[in-house]
Image (cartoon, rainbow, N blue to C red; front, side, top):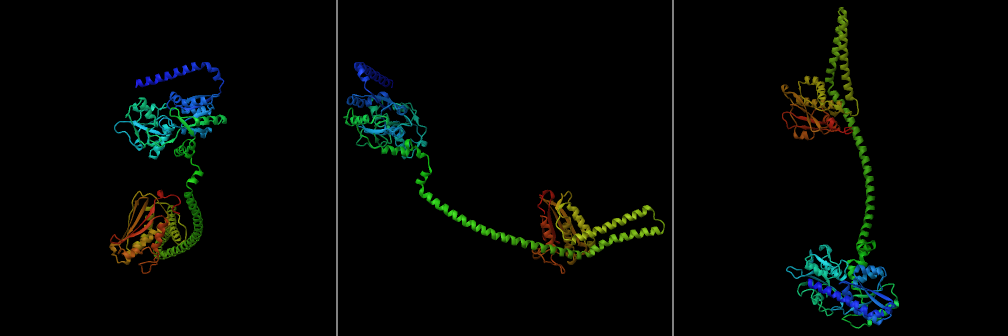
Length: 608
């Protein structure tokens, strides 16, 4: 390897010495040369400046001989420097690869004058992918997936973009390859990267591998060609991995004088083969443009930016279908909107009719409840008379006692005061009985408030106890202590309990229950978010048929009953947010249960 580097270094010094001698030999003509206008020709130096000068020296020599009034000077540059020189108008003509020319022409307006032919062993530009001849080396291009690939530059035409197109058509894009290893120019650095193990494969310009082998820089069989194509008649000796493209163009810059461009073109076409090199008429670069368009780079980079016009052009069929679908949807939406409006009007009318029917039903129900209260009051008349008779008898006793004491002269102030107080208490008791009767009879709205459920049960039991005694029924209370308050209307719950106690009493007295067993048990207990009251009797119980219709309006098992009591009871419980049901599966007798929501569990407004 060191010998090869020394050989290249010696060749460079020999070239420099030759140039110095040539300059010394031409010193006599320096004054005349200085008077000749200089024409600068930029040359792409993909293998270094020395190689570029050597490769195109026949062309430069021919132009200097054919057009002696001008001095043609080669300027070897890498791609970036060449683009900068063109942008700075420091060149008159350019010799570069077809891909670089296409980009410069699109950006700076270069014009192709001639195309290189017969250079070396090939008349066209192509790429060759090489890999070290080691076991497991890739054979096809698609086997490069996941392998490290060395290129001189990601902007190089023959050094990357040509093979990029082939890889993409083989199903491999840059995403299927690790990051490219860019070695920079000259292209021989690709060989060094493969030898050093920095890459698994590398991209060369076609025929470069053969030249390196001929120069002894690469051993025969040291590298293999990946994805090798069959040789053609135009380049039978060069192995390549890609399709071929037109060879390097000779192009002029926009500021170059047209007359000079014509004379240079004529001399290029008239140039005979020199060192295997010649020029022909400018070739069509359609295949090069197809490559750039397919890769969407250079002048076709805009294809990566999708516009509305592109979408309309590429997907006009789909867009037409979408437009028709949108039109159909608009028509359908308008039709549905019209149907919805009509249906909404119909529903609004139906809801109004339903609300009116509900209001009418509520009015009838309130009237029915009022009649039921009056009926219940009639059934309770004897109990009320018995209860009302007690305070009246007590008042008469107190008054008679005071009168006798006065007649006998034993009525002291304390005695009279005590008798008057007793009369007042019994009068208040009679007034309370009257208020309760008026509350039953009077129609009013529900007034829920936190109530002590045990106290409501005890008050109802006290009120019903005289009637129970007349019927020989014993009332037993089993009230759970510590019950939280419930949200209820006290008078509604009292009416509900009295109705359940009355039904239980009727069931035992009409069912021939022995007097010793006539007992009603009232229990309370707390549930999840509610409190429960159960009224259990010792009557004959409930059949399945009776239990199924028990709460229907006007259904009764009593000979003189109206069939409204339990229906009203269920209405009362449901208005409070609770539930009322019967349980006839606990012989003997039946059990009626209802629940009321706890005041602490009820949100404001839910019980109105």
